[in-house]
Image (cartoon, rainbow, N blue to C red):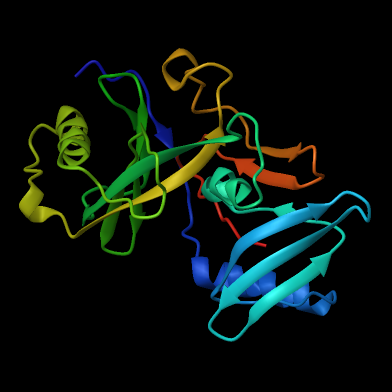
Length: 231
C-alpha cells in the first residue's frame, strides 16, 4: 500500500577467506613476507633513521622487525593499532556494527526497500535463503559483535511493513550475524554527523607525525562489504 517504486538489484557474496588468500598470494609474488596468525604487540619510531621497529608475536614467529615504512590497514582496528605505537591525536575511524538475518527465500528476486525510519535495507537472495540487513550502531570494540534482539525485531518489523501477509517470526530465522564497518570518524560526534548511506566508497589515507600511514576504505553503502587486512 502506497508503494511508488522499488529498486531491483543483483549482488554477489564474497568468500572472505579466499579474498585474503588471494591478497596474500599477490603480495608474496611481489616479494612480501606474509605472517598469518601473528599480532603486532608494539612498534617504535626512530626519528634519526626514519624507520620503525615492530614487535610481533604469533604461532610460528616472534621477534622484532626493522622496517622503513609502516602501513596500518587494520580497518576498524586502526585506532587500537595506533595505541600500540603510542600514537596520539583524534580517532581516525568510527566502528559501526551492522546486523543481518537469513530467512527462507520468499521473493522472486533481490530487492532494496526503505524502513519506516528512513534507512534503506536489502533482501538478497542466495540459493534458498534470503539475507536481510542491515542495521547501524556505533561500537567501542569491534572484536566480538553479535546482533541484538532490538536489531532483529527492527528487521522483522521492516519486512512485515512491506509483506503484511507473511508470517515473519524469530522462529523462522535460519541464521543471524553482524559485521563492523570502519566509517570515517566525524569531526565532532557520531550524533551530529549523519552521513548519507549512499555516498561513494572512499579510500582514506592518514599520515601521523611519526610517518605511519593508516589506510581505511570507508564503505557507507549497506550492500558492500569491507575487507580488512592487518599488515
